[in-house]
Image (cartoon, rainbow, N blue to C red; front, side, top):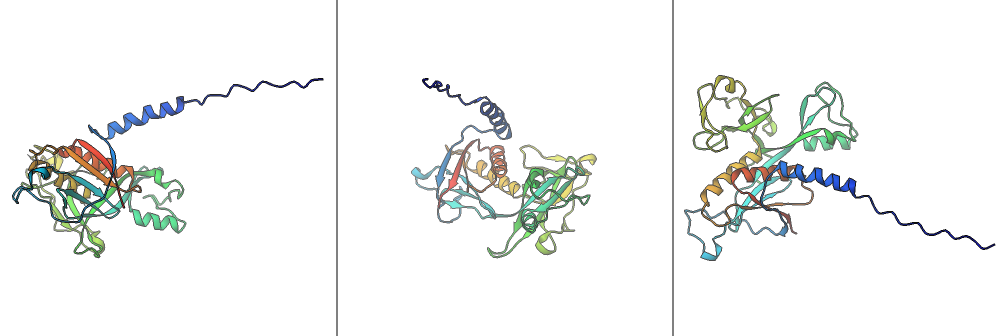
Length: 295
């Protein structure tokens, strides 16, 4: 009897609907997190350090009139570059703010302390004493904070800077306050690493004139708003935002004044990139390029 051969089945086509659904979720979410007109990925090498040329210095030749603004982030500092030079480094210490499931409370840890705990077999604890799952603790991170530190040298460990912030709820920072000269109400912290809030830093009272980094935000404090002010570590993001606002104002007549390149390595968390893009957009730099730092 002749053997019966089965006809080969028609190969099944991959179901692309799940992937398409994922993209329909991710793309609007990304666009809602930060708005920009142009996004590209390039690779750059940073030039040697020199101070940025401001308008009161000898203007560059006509073919070098572009601003060529960049903002680089490393594991230790943020730095703005323009016209072939750099502003001073803005050093920071990274902290993670967790939202615990056990009590619903926020708790803040230095990122390096969390990594040390996890490597030793433990995990950070919530305010109610419950220990987080060391395998899933990263899912509890509500935000990443880059708290600005003041350093006297490259080798100096530095001390935290503290500022005055508005707060809406849970004593968490909202907008940083500045004075009439657009300077932060800020002082270096006390104790080891500047972790203790400086007693000399006082919160403005009701009726005091204050402002934030937002345009046309100057106002007199109402009693209910003054009661919500908090002393909190100064964010390196806010320092960068202040510098970007000043640069955009100073070079407003340049053709590429709305352009910025954000430079980062592959290991930089996307949350940090989004935070920098938001600050850049708020300062007027709406045309954003993402760049990978070359070797």
